[in-house]
Length: 238
Image (cartoon, rainbow, N blue to C red; front, side, top):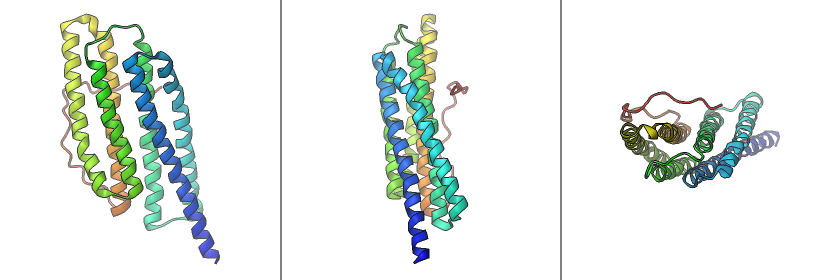
């Protein structure tokens, strides 16, 4: 009876940690959606709300890491249970980074307030953001259902996200080369596009954790290398 009680308690604690990760995922999806809506509409107040909301995502990430570390220390899980604890910690890290990218998108939107427009680029960024937001949602769904087929499909989808980014980068570069007055806003929009592209990379990372959880091994990194014609530097997440 004592062993059964311990196992039941462990299961409850593990379910609680996973529930926190899913809550993080919902907040990240909302941050991306609202951040993009703020960008397209030039809504500074909404962008500021998204920026401040990242603190909640960071706090949940800390909760996951703290609770998972406690499970490792007190329960010493093995096999599948150990993989589950390790995977939720990794997924929380991916989601925390996605929250940072949504925050950066919001910060750039605030910085561009009152700036000029480059025809069609914000709408293109909206479509790109919707694409990677779906990747995040599907990756979390694959994790919950332990669906490695769906996880593999999400990993394959990252190539398309990279291509959308590269096409958008080339469009921005063309506008900046044709008219130097586009450079300032073009650079802001480029960094936003890069942030969104990186969310797709982290969605892929979440999908890889599902495969690890089910099979005990991460997938081989045999995805095509992304186009390196774009700028390779990235901004900080201060």
